[in-house]
Image: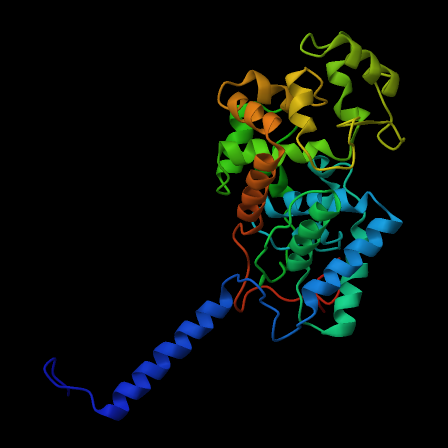
Length: 329
């Protein structure tokens, strides 16, 4: 038996160093990293970008969907593409949660996945497609290019019963909204920046009418309230009907700081938007972003990266789905 004073032989030291190196490589490979697919699928990120651009020119609203996908997927337990799973006999889809009301364009994720499968079968995860498509969608909307790490694997489970515990509602208190984001590592300034994504896309009247009926929310600009009543003439809108109002009527498909200028003028659509102004912990960041679009972009990028790296599945856990809407056979 060796004692503490004995020296290892040169061959033993070599084996120990080799094992340590292999151990390091294995776990380093399990971590998210930039250009994760550089060897296994060199054109992976370029293919995602090509498809995002092509889909944007056919269906401009896909760019907004990509950003929403990242938020609704990564907030719930992990960035693992669980949001994409359809309902099966064994489990119900997260898509049916009221917190995911209005989510769409999932079928175009499959378009991207098919292009990647043609190039590199069984290689690029749906979870990474969610993140990379959001990155490229931000650019299509005039936002900053964000370097996103990859190397995620896909969940085999859907978390419908967990959704409401992670995704804040549009009429939750600001303290609850902040705590939800803080639980995934996004601080107050980052939360205000991420809510700036409301500057693009639109909101269904179902989520607006409580500020209009039976009486108008006094924090709403009166002229803006009249506009919203024109868009949402009934206090009981049909969720399946096309009844929407734009978050930003000036640049509705540009990711910019007009959102913050609007809410400072009491022209926010949702209760959570108005609370950013009325809450003393968030108000200073609203002012800062309203004054400086470049600063808003930098903080939005920083917060989106943090959110995109929330508890990823990697290493030998999960799987690489062949089709994003269901697990492999």
